[in-house]
Length: 296
DNA sequence: AATCGACACAACCGCAATCTA
DNA sequence: CTAGATTGCGGTTGTGTCGAT
Picture 1: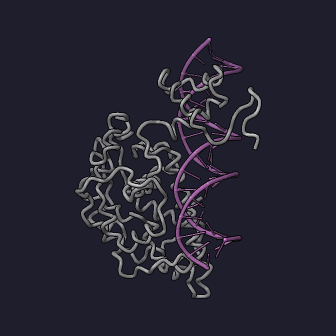
Picture 2: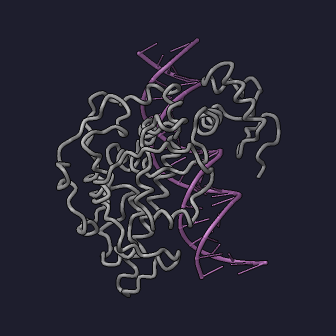
Picture 3: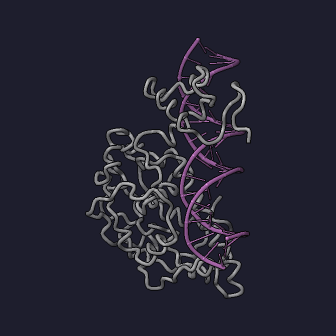
């Protein structure tokens, strides 16, 4: 791979612990800036760009490294993506401990999954044999699960404090299936950032982040946008129109802080919780070929 | 046991915006 | 004012892991 050779050469690829340590020392001493000087001083054979990225994505304090996105975080991302588009850095400011890269990866992963689901369903719709994902991954059909719109009416703010980063590992298939089979408890995870030590700590570290980036910003729940972007209205015929649930048509206002965690009047868009996970995969069997891909 | 596909994650690249001399 | 340097962002790619077959 020729990751690093001569002294002048820029080193690429995975970071070593020693490099991280050097980078951390630099930040401790000079702060998170002057990235280019790290190389010019001969401390590391990395570009300033690379150093900055490493700091932002891995070394910065209070990052939720190794934590899968909680349903709450997933919902926030979905909402904000509908609102802002692919402004990952902006979206990430609403998710303490998450980086733009995290959000970006999460989203693209979801998009791929959705695209695959739609593709599979389109391909199999003609043959009416809907093995698709369910068969392949042995996903149980959840005909009795609570429809998303009903979930939206459930109490959203849990009581028990969430364990911070309980397990730094990927979501196992078992996790996913458990989540699907018994989604309600999972959906009632606590939402208060203050309950999460890491998040609470983040308030000290990133106070500005917890303010709405734009004061008085109008928050359109985004559900309509988001659904619209799926460009397959038939897909959602089974659901009530979003606006039909407790006056969703009107714009909500962000409170001054913690915009997504303390919305009053019910956070209707929780219908997007685990949006993709909540797809009963066979539901798509009745859907014809999408007019166009979900969204690039 | 081997293989494959899906997924999560890390890191690079190119471009744009911003800063600074 | 301007050119070069630096920083920030979004898109993309590469890799490792895990479950299913």
